Every structure is written in structure tokens, then in C-alpha cells.
Amino acid sequence: MAQKLPLDTLTDLARTQTDEAARRLGALQSARLGAGQKLELLLQYRQDYYDQLHQLMNKGLPTAQWRNFQAFLGTLDGAIEQQRAIVAQADSRLDHGRSDWQHHKRRLNSFDTLAERVRRQEMLLQAKREQRDSDERAARKFFDRAAHPTL
Image 1: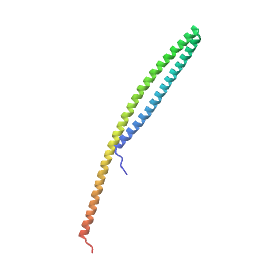
Image 2: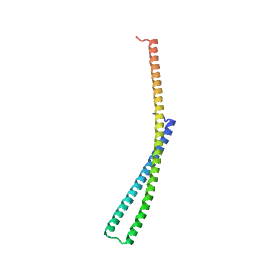
Image 3: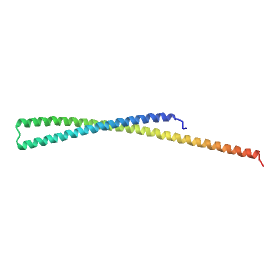
Image 4: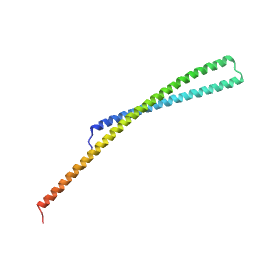
């Protein structure tokens, strides 16, 4: 049974931190996706509304109704700009979350590499001990037979 190395505790902690960073990254990706979809929806809505205004203008549109359309388009443009800012913030948070996850992943990989190196050294020492014990048993057996020949 392999013994638990002190380094294994650090590796487990790093793995937990990496998993948590991955979960946070997933949430950030979902938030970014949602913000982007909302922006696309607003842009599509604005285009549809603009197309509707254009069609009405071709048929003849009263000035009051035209002002209402223009005011609504202005409000919609404001909402689009706000949503673009939200998307930019989500991009920034996503970049930070990605960097955080990469940092934790590199740290975990470093601990894993170090732990593997220690385990290999332990296995090598164990193999040398077993070989030495085997050699000693064989030598004892040889000397016992030489000292007590049986015919």
C-alpha cells in the first residue's frame, strides 16, 4: 500500500482549488454567453423596429408617430450600449477567470509532477532494498550450503 506523502495533501488542495476555479470559469462563461445573447436579441429587435419604421415612412408616417419611433429607437440604442458594456465586463471577468483557472492548473500540474518524481524515487529505493535483501538471502543460502555440505 502506497503511503500518503505530505506533498499529496498539497496536491489534493491544489486539485480542489483547480476544480473550484473551473466551476467559477464555467459560471463566467455562462454569464458571458447570456449577456451576448441578450445583446444579439436587442440588436435584432432594433433592426426589426427600424425596418418597421422604414416601411411606415415609405407609406407616409405622421410626425408624432415618427417622433415616437425615433424616441423609442434612442431608448433602444441606450439599452444596446448598456448591454455592450455588460458584455465587455463579462469578457473581462471571463479573461480573469480563465487566467485564474490556468494558474491553478499549472500549480496542480507542478505538484503532480513533483509527487510523481518522489514516488519514482521511493520505488527505486524500494527496488534497491528488495534487491539487497534478495542478494543477502542468496549469499546466506550459499554460505550455509558451503558450510554444511550434504551428500
